[in-house]
Length: 259
Image 1 (spheres, rainbow, N blue to C red):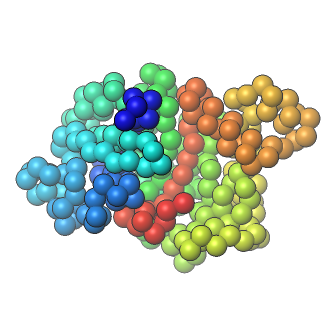
Image 2 (cartoon, rainbow, N blue to C red; image 1 turned 120 degrees about the vertical axis):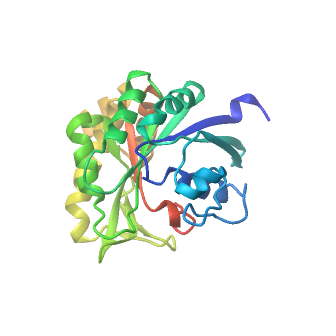
């Protein structure tokens, strides 16, 4: 395989937020494994050491790979405990980008803050995955706002989850202004999500415009950007490390929640 079609992606963040579970889901969706294991069952690819299985927690860096749409992805699962911070430094030394996994508890955790700070300081392209939206009392909006309090317009949420009875039933694709459920059906954004959607769209549009002079001129002239232009601007922002995009869902159910 050509070197330009190989990507090294590090999964980093606070301990216990679901990095190993997300790695398992990625490998499953890449057809690298035929069954999605669980940390609690002790049968994940990344946590293979006996002590990790016993503790149900990663204690050493682990790697696995899979192919998707003609690209090979080397997934690096990084322990989240502070004692293993050197593992994160080692992983990011070879990573092309990072996925920062954080819980949906409505706050900026120390591990998430340290991961973002490191990526910003060392100019490592990164995105945030807010995990655990299938859990009771999860709050995507509050979590994103807590992170934005420190990092401001750098944080660009690409979805607004549709939470019904405390469970995520789908999401609004912010760039396109449509609501999608897990059967991939799309419909108009409902009234109860309009405010959150409008706020997220403004944030992501401004982030996209700031990353491209032509898009910025169009935004000043028209006051809006087309969905494809928003995606283009955000991608440029990620590559230049000026934007950290945000997605969310449940790593344990990522096979059903696949976008």
